[in-house]
Image 1 (tube, one colour):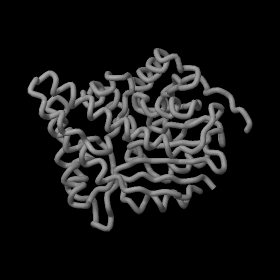
Image 2: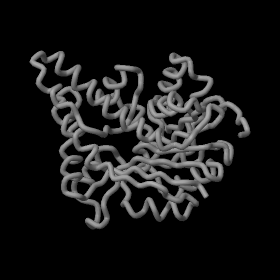
Image 3: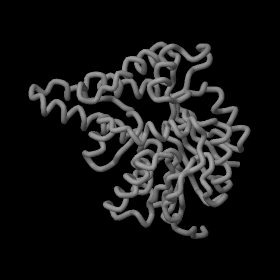
Length: 292
């Protein structure tokens, strides 16, 4: 396999963005949510997504308020890291010479997870200058900044080299962009046979239009959740062929049930997620696709 060059230096220029994208950038530049920061402080892996798997609800029984809080935080972080590991496990048989692309990288936990699992180079992209600086500092502290780098760029127009990536992904970030534009950029960046993975919330359009609960989630995160069917249509239009689809809805409900009990971490959106998952109007999907 041909060795590819190391990631380019992190970009510092302001990416070209729409008015809406500027609002999204402002939101994430201002965000200091404990459900992201307190969990990440446990091991310096800062994720911006939800968790999967059976939750250890015995953490709720700790009689010591401080101990209860710490145990709940650790359990939620374990569940969210399990989600990151699941995504990374589907990126394919990567080598240390391969490059991967993290679209909408947040504070960088996903890129670090992929690097630690596969040894690969990683380029993360975020439209939040604050997140980008934070993630690059974390990579520097870990001593992996020669292989894991974050860039203040628009994931729809990265400027990265065509065909340079063996794998790419979005982890709960597709709802901020138009899917055709997003998948066109992934298709451009991936080499032929490269692997694309997304874990995303989508509304179930066999249910009808977006439900009230989905609308509440959109308003909370200033996003626009897409219908399930549009993912597959947009992938087909952009040379991405699904090879594995998994419904993670049941697997994520325990995370949300536990998070609802975490007084120090609740954001007020927990009931909307739980109601939408339970009434079938919202789904949590893993989609794995090959670039043809």
